[in-house]
Amino acid sequence: MTCSWDTMMGDSMLNHILSEYYIPNYILVPESEAKKPPCVPSCPVLVFINSKSGGQLGGNLLSTYRSVLNPNQVFDLGETKPDKVLHQIYATLGSLKQRGDDFASAIENSLRIIVAGGDGTAGWLLGVISDLKLPHPPPVATVPLGTGNNLPFSFGWGKKNPGTDRQSVFSFLEQVKNATEMKIDSWHIIMRMGAPKEGSCDPIGPLELPHSLHAFHRISQTDKLGMDGYHTFRGGFWNYFSMGMDAQVSYAFHSERKLHPEKFRNQLINQGTYIKLGCTQGWMFGSLFRPSPTNIAQIAKVKVMRKQGQWEDLKIPRSIGSIVCLNLPSFSGGFNPWGTPYRKKFLDRGLTPPFVDDGLIEIVGFRNVLHGLVLLAPNGHGTRLAQANAVRFEFKKGAANHTFMRIDGEPWKQPLPADDETVVVEISHFGQVSMLATPLCRSRSMHDPSSPTACYNEDNNSSDEGDSPDDLEEKRKFGAADSFKFPDEFDISYLS
Image 1 (cartoon, rainbow, N blue to C red):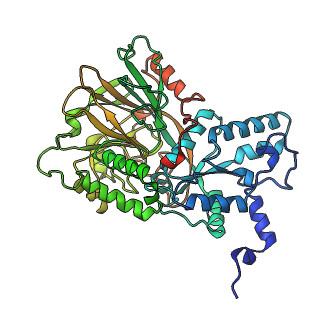
Image 2 (image 1 turned 135 degrees about the vertical axis):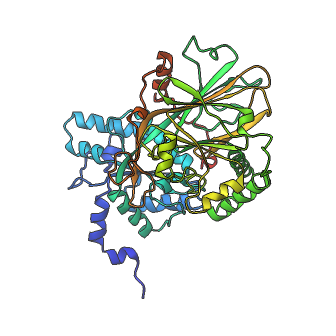
Image 3 (image 1 turned 90 degrees about the vertical axis):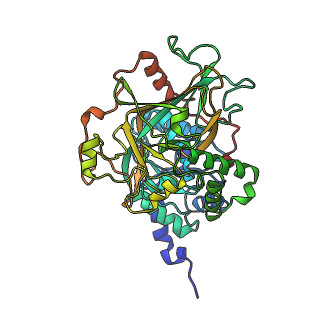
């Protein structure tokens, strides 16, 4: 005779465990009767699940969480947008606190968020939380339901799709309760380009830009690209921005998934398809001895800002066919392109340890997929190009009419100038968000005594000093309520 896990746990113990995460309806549902539990939960959680992620796993996980928690604290992102949920809940908490509700105050102070999906889904939630401008934003734990799962892997939540049974959910909730908070840098991205010849560019337009990039009108009257015929898109990311061959493979994968979603319902099959596309897109069989006709140096001029207000040219070797601006130590399913340089190399090149909260982004290059395979070796890494507070790519008419880009797993095909116009992509530091980390966390904080402290330079701290008033206003607007909001009509099945 076999017993279910619930039976072995016992009803009283199970109810006690659930009470640690439980949020009552009077906080979740407007106009509900104020029925408070007998004790304040130690780890109240809100759960957001992309039910379209992980094949059937997203839907199964949604059902399990709703069976073990208050169903009203578990949200299907295919039905409910997180910005509306969080605005409503924090408005309710604020109102209750003003009326002297200590229980609501305790919920707000200890609230944690769980998001289940791919890196794109996690980035969506982080953007919404950034928009709220809360004094103490809730930290986020990520359940790996995507293909790459770089965000969960960076903070110790693994990269394999999880179990969806009750025991797996209780185990994950226990990890969330015991996890530690870690701040990570947010990165602001602005792209300025000529207006498309046909169609509208807002919200996404014919370019099929990622959902996290949005068109807006330039504020600055002095910006030479603020003239008629140019448009500016802005957004943000937390893991990486990449350009070149790796983004091309990702674009091919996403395009194939849009055409045949029924073929992409299993993580192992998805990863196999990804590798196959990598070979057919020229990653594997590009020349090892001469530059690719679309190498980065031929299509873009790259500048970096190591000190505020001082741009300098970054020399890109002609062999580099892909470039990655990396914030976290996980890329393409768990690899760390920056690696761990020897201390002497830190000192010789003026580099610092790759902390996730130091206001610096690591810039790494790759020649082709054979070069990328060095990441499989111990201490393998790409070509370390620089660390910077900001990065700027300038594209003019040249060797190619387009390239491929992606931010946090969301790729797009980017047209390049066909005449005398200029396309500019600029990345700069913009605030921080809070993540939840397990003991298996790979990310390192500059404030953690156990992290390496070699040659950190206080001059590298990111600040707004040196930015023009127009640029400062632009960055402030990045966090406005509608600046990171996804279009209401977009299909989450296209989101990782």
